[in-house]
Image (cartoon, rainbow, N blue to C red; front, top):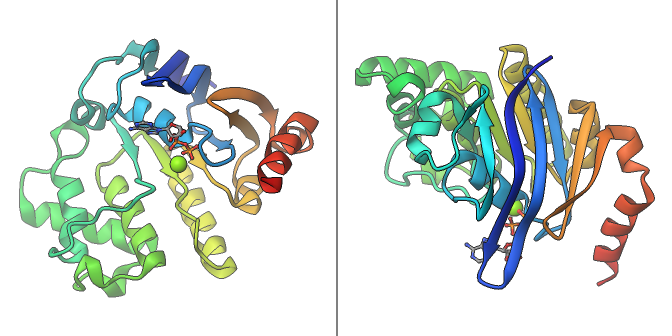
Length: 244
Ligand SMILES: Nc1ncnc2c1ncn2[C@@H]1O[C@H](COP(=O)(O)OP(=O)(O)O)[C@@H](O)[C@H]1O
Ligand SMILES: [Mg+2]
C-alpha cells in the first residue's frame, strides 16, 4: 500500500491554545483509518487542516505525494479531498436532491457542468446512502439521522478520492449505526480511502484495522485497533475525561 494522504508534523495554534500539536499520520490508499480522542482533542481541527478550511501554523499536508499546504479548500476538493461536517449546514430552503447536486456541481475535476447531470449524480449518491425516499423533501425537514446521511451524500457527490468523516454516527441508534457502517464499507469498496472520526467504538472496531488516538492535540497512540484500544494511555485519556 502507498499513502494517498500524509500529514507531516502539523501544528495549529489558536491564540494561546495548541489545538493540534506536531501530528503526523498517513492514510494508505484503500484503507479505512480510525481517529478517536476525547472532546477537544483536535480531531475536527485536523480535518479542517487537511481539507483546507484552516491553515497549519507549522507542518505540511501531502496529497498523492504533492504538497498541498496553502492550497485553497475548493482546490483541494477538486483534487479529490472530501469531508463531512460535524456541525451540519445544509442549504435549508433547497431540496435534499439539490443540496447534493451542489456537491456534484463543484466536485472533483471542477464538477459536473450541467444541472440535470448533477441532479442525476445526486440521485445516485442519495440512493447509495439510503435517502432515496427523501429526495424531494426540503433539507431542513430531515431529522438528525437523515442529515448525517445527507452530509455523506454531499461529500460523495464531489467524487472524492479521500473521504474525511467527522462523527457521522453521533446521535444515531444502533440500527442506524449498523446501516452507516455498511455505507462506509461500500464507500471504501468503491476505492475511496476513508478517515473515520468516531466516538462510537463499535463502529471503529468494525471498520478500521488501524487506529490513531489524539489527546490534547497530540498523537498518543497509533497501530492495530484492538491493541490501541487496550493501551493503558488510551484508556486513561478516556477514563480521565469521564471522571471530570
Ligand atoms: N476556530 C477556533 N478558535 C479557537 N479555538 C478553537 C477553534 N476551533 C477549535 N478550537 C479549540 O481547539 C481545540 C480542539 O477542538 P476540536 O478540533 O474541535 O476538537 P475535537 O473535534 O477533537 O472535539 C478545542 O480546545 C477547541 O476549543
Ligand atoms: Mg470535533
